[in-house]
Amino acid sequence: MHSPIQLQQIIEEAIPNIEYPNHPKDLYEPIRYIMSLGGKRIRPVMVLMATELFTTEIHKALDVALAIETFHNFTLVHDDIMDNAPLRRGKITVHEKWGVNNAILSGDVMMVESNKHLSKVDLLVLKPVLDTFNATAQGVCEGQQLDMEFEQRTDVSIGEYLEMIRLKTAVLLGGAMKLGAIVGGANSVDADLLYEFGENLGVAFQLQDDILDVYGNPEKFGKQVGGDIIANKKTFLHLKTLTLAQGDESDSLTSITVDQDIKVNEVTSLYNKYDIKELATAEMDKYLTKANQALDSLAVADEKKYQFRELVQQILERER
Amino acid sequence: MHSPIQLQQIIEEAIPNIEYPNHPKDLYEPIRYIMSLGGKRIRPVMVLMATELFTTEIHKALDVALAIETFHNFTLVHDDIMDNAPLRRGKITVHEKWGVNNAILSGDVMMVESNKHLSKVDLLVLKPVLDTFNATAQGVCEGQQLDMEFEQRTDVSIGEYLEMIRLKTAVLLGGAMKLGAIVGGANSVDADLLYEFGENLGVAFQLQDDILDVYGNPEKFGKQVGGDIIANKKTFLHLKTLTLAQGDESDSLTSITVDQDIKVNEVTSLYNKYDIKELATAEMDKYLTKANQALDSLAVADEKKYQFRELVQQILERER
Image (tube, rainbow over all chains, first blue to last red; front, side, top):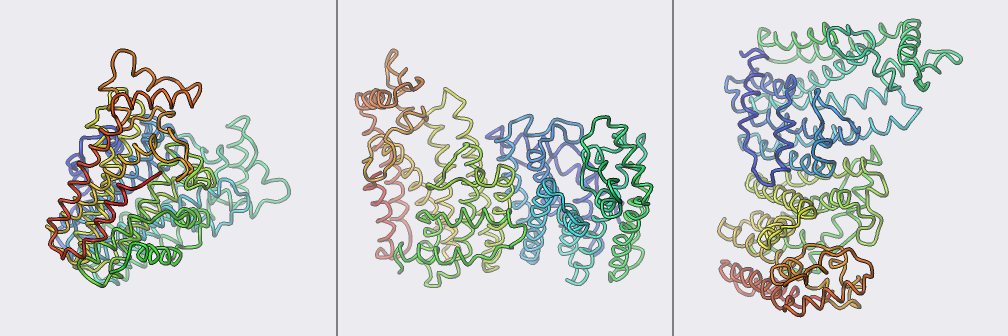
């Protein structure tokens, strides 16, 4: 079995070898650019991990892994336009570097490139691979739509929020796992269990992200603590507090920020008063439990599941 | 054999029956909206026409026809954003109605919907269908990129222009024909000949469009004569004149428009002086000849080719 680090190296080596046309230059350069920005390559690694549960021939899944990574980066390019984001992984975003129109179009052609990767899988699994990928891609678009809509709404429920992060983030992790399983030759029960594992892990991951924004170790990540608070972002913590706060307590959650430190302190105190960190952690644990249950049910030898348990553990121990 | 009108009716009846999710509403309503705006449905009709050359079971190709029409409408949604266009087929554009971000995302999900339609074809032809579709989609994106770049450039050659319209417009007609042929069971020689037919027809169609913008009958189409001239659009006529005009004659082509009528008259006089209409028509005829040659070589009975000859004829006789 390869370790996740080894699988990441396989992905890192494969990405610069993807052949894109050279012309029109400004259509394809943004693709090479965004694909080279790095990241942990968690989604394609999950594809290969899932494949390796069922076969040693993980090269069979490399095209699917690249399809997933290309699709993920396509969503980053278009999301950054929508969010008007100047930076991605510390580098200037595609739309800032090449212009919005160019970024729309390079994103579009990345979707085509994803499909080209996918179409190379063994014909025996082509149809289920396409079905899984298309359902995944559709879910991710729906999640982004809901995320945009929630910014304009003041009545987002916790249930709606959980559904949004499921679609926007978790479905792609589930899809990556399921695609890897299918290519590896898993039966549909096991493929679906790996989907369950990935999806629940994804929701847990996002909830942990919400928690770490407030309670993470700033030295570990160098990122401003309370960024979500300053942006009045409707995270799990924010929405949960809205359901518990009394009187005008919740005003600080949605107030316009004058002094950022004061606002972060105020909101954090409110979170502390209502044990929001513990409530959010309990919610996260529910999803991690479901992820572990899916893993328990999976018909592969226990020693092969080791790295999947590690993934769960890494989320629990993650610091920001 | 069905007539093109009958095939168009089959498409028109199928489109409202495409099932999209209802939620998120603002993600899927733009798709229903743009798909319902009509048009001649020329691309999906071409899919079905090509299929019917090889089999009577044209229903086998309906999903591919809908994939092509969905993809075409996706490009319209995104192109309209890039062109900042207020109207499409006389109706308000998607990005004006729902906002740019929503239009980007609805377009993205239309690409997924296209792929969902495609994935329903018979497994026996799935791989060549995907390969043809992906190559086509990629070409269309490249054509749009070149079109955008040409707006900023002053040194576009006629060869570059012909390559741009080939990619932006003609490749999709060729792809539609080839896809229909593949689903109909054509061998690869015939499928490629139909691609040749469609692509050459597409270039001719665009050249005729360039000609009709200046020399069309305004009463037939209700569209302003000389729209391309007023916009300084780098059409075949414009670029050809640049290569022939002497001294400062060509200044009128690129001048900033003060009085639209004066500009249209000036440029049209220049076109007339250099027989640009005849030169453009001769260029168009070259492509129509190539389209007809591809049709001649096609290994199907002559009487089945009748409607394809008609298509060529319709372009020749088109008035704006």
